Image (cartoon, rainbow, N blue to C red; front, side):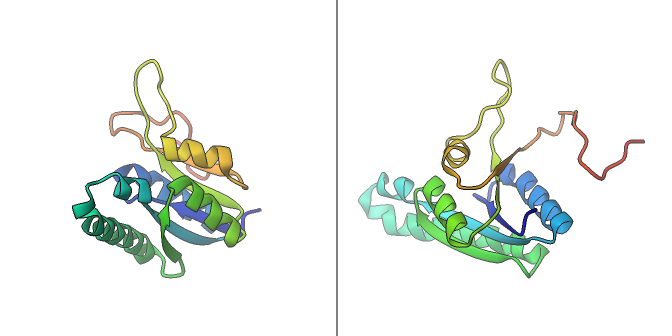
Length: 154
């Protein structure tokens, strides 16, 4: 069903669950994983001109570090760092490599709106040429109501 999975990460803690899910899906379907980090050009361009080059370099280094941590889990993973609008770059990359699925993290919110997609995740869901699996990072004190396939309860 899935042969190529794009794992879009921002290197944050909230992306950790997406990494786990992407590897699980790839294992189950024998798919390859392409990890992608996008340096947000808007963030760079809206910063003071004097620090733009340093910021771009720091963001690229952060992305390469995040990708190397994922690559350390499985050296068959293909990694890429792009610059531009994150949602557009994720969708473009997905189309370029003819991927079947995008997996990405998103931030959860508590209260009346118990789950809201982050702006990048929402834009990817709206624009993606393929299905998108978004993974909300659970707070440590939250109980998981939905079992993960393959896990058994005690």
